[in-house]
Length: 447
Image (cartoon, rainbow, N blue to C red; front, top):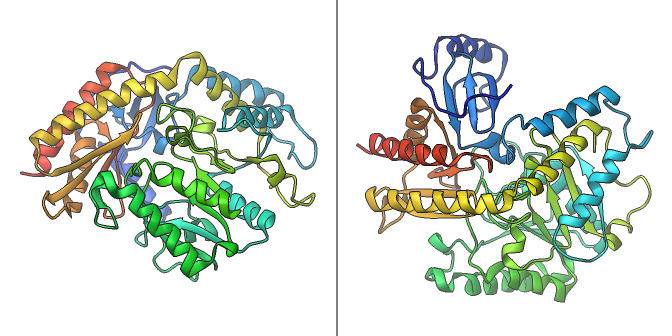
């Protein structure tokens, strides 16, 4: 059922019915399962979420970058319904089904590069990352994986090892997987080499390459894995020279370059994949989140020679490529194409970036505005000179937003980044209204 695409508040947030359900949630579910917005959803459509009290909130979170085509997109819902009527599951390892094959074909076509590719389907981004590293180790015969500061690659053992942030993701959950090495990322606003933004890319690339050469040994490295734009790390867009230089180094040294496109994929940055902004052709690409339009599915797409080097039975899983999720994913891809959502992402992103730039001019707490396409964030600081992270101001801003009927998300290693991830189908008036609410929230949070 489609909802009017307009904000509406009829109670405080959370309202009485949500508070009742929160009490049940607290009695049944551990507090470790974190929630950003304390409301329970009754229904959702496009870029509007309606809670059980009848409040309608503008969605600048998109289910954590999942709903690029909007919530309950009619064509995706119909594809799910048709597939569920036919059959719900077979396990691809038992009896095959066409949706798996068709989706693999589309991912082979869409991921960067004209080389021959193969795709396996999994259930999540973390599972995709685990399999990517497993593939790289098997193909190269090398043990080491190189990851970066501020990275987020998932919560399973190897993916969590690759992830950079200790609290809340890693604290107390060790020991972690061996042969994972973390190196600096070219974060222009906080360049680890102390250089200005225009020099951050080359200097950080030099640092990473030197560290691999001296302290790890390139002949021990199976892969370098990077998010083309770091998601949970704070929407860090690397300095432009950084990733191309590392990708070339990997080619020269026989190291596989893995692009983690779990959050950045399927039009979010104005391209099918964020790697395209940097001219990258990764050896392996991991996908999930927006691929399924709300259903759990992920993929690993790699050069054919990498995939075909693995022995029969070495890859897979019971639910990987579930036919309902695969059918949904095929319609997500078709909807992005049919509705011109790559171009739409650029337009939405331009509006968001300009709007946050205006907020930066008016609010001293906004230290940096950054992003690609409709993946935009502002980093809050207590002082622009020292860039001391304003963690509490970020938390208050997010709370003020949802109390006014706007869903935004936190990010950043220092918990001081407010990230915006609206559906690419969002109407222009909702984008503008959301920016206005964000302005009010910043003012209230920093009084």
